[in-house]
Image 1 (cartoon, rainbow, N blue to C red):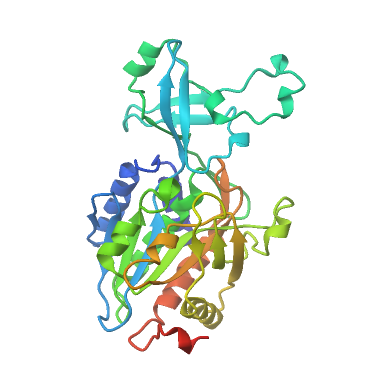
Image 2: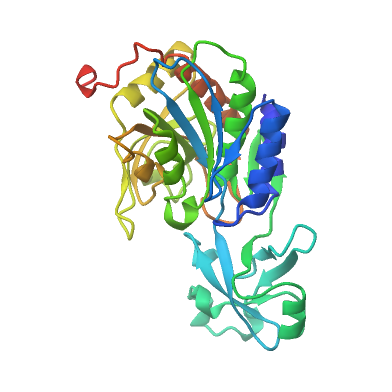
Length: 366
C-alpha cells in the first residue's frame, strides 16, 4: 500500500491545479476512478463525486479532500516582460522571493518563471530583514517583452503555482508542492480501491472538492446535492514537532493520523469546526480496536471547507481527520507515507463501524 500511495501522491503533486483551475487534477482522478470501475460525475463548480452504494438504512457518509492548491493569478504584464501577480490563498510572503513558479497556460505550453529576489550585492542593511509584500514582487520568465510573454499565452488572470516538485526524503518522508491536499486525494483513491467490493458499509460518497484554498466553500454544492448524515474531511493536521511549533500541540510527523477536536480561523473567515461527539468516539474506538496510533489536535489559525459542509440541511455530523504535515503552504511541504497508510486503515476501520444502529443522537455521547 505504501508504494501505491507514494506513486499516487507523486503523480498528483506534479499536476498543477490552482484553486478554481483544478480541471487537470480532476481529469486525472476521474481516470483513476474509472480504472477501478468506479463511475463519477462532475458538478458545475468542478467537484468530482463518486458514490459507493451501501446500506440505505445506515447513515450516509461524505468523505472528501480538496484538489486545489494555493498560488497566484497574473495581475499585469509589464512592457519589459516582467509579470506582476495577485496571491490566491494563504501564501506566505516571507518565503516567496527566488521561488520557481509555473504559469499554467495549457498542458503542453506551461511556462516556468522565477519570483525575483533583489541581488544581494545591491541590498541595503534595512532591506536585508524586510519581508517584501507580494505586490512588489515580479516574475521573470526570461522573455524580454510583454508582447513575447503574451504570445506565450500569459495574460491577466493566468494561473500561477509553485513549480511542481515531488521528492523523497529519508525514512519514508515525502516533500514537495501541494501535499496539502493531494495527500488527502491519494488516501481516498487508495481507500476506494480497498472498499469498492466491500459489503455491509454505509453509502459512501467520495468527493474531490474545489476552491478550498480560495473561499472554503467549493465542497458546499456537493454537500447540498448529497445531503449526507456524516461528513469526514481529509486534510493536513499541523505537525508540532519542530522547534518553531513546539508550543502548538503534540502532533508528530510519523506518529500516525490525527483527529481535530477544535479548529477556528480567527481571522477574516470566522469559522471552524467542533466535531459532533459521535465522531471522535468513532475514530478513537476504531483506532484502538485496530491498534492504529491516533493523535489529537486543537488549534487556532486554520480551518477547512468542512466548516461550511457541516451547516448543510439540518446539520451534518462532522469531523476533520488528517495526516501530520510540516511547513504548510510553503513550496516544499513534508509528510510521512506511514501516516498516510495508517490513515487509510483507520478510515476503513471507522467506516466498517457505521451501520444502521450507529447513533447520531448527541445525548448518547454526552
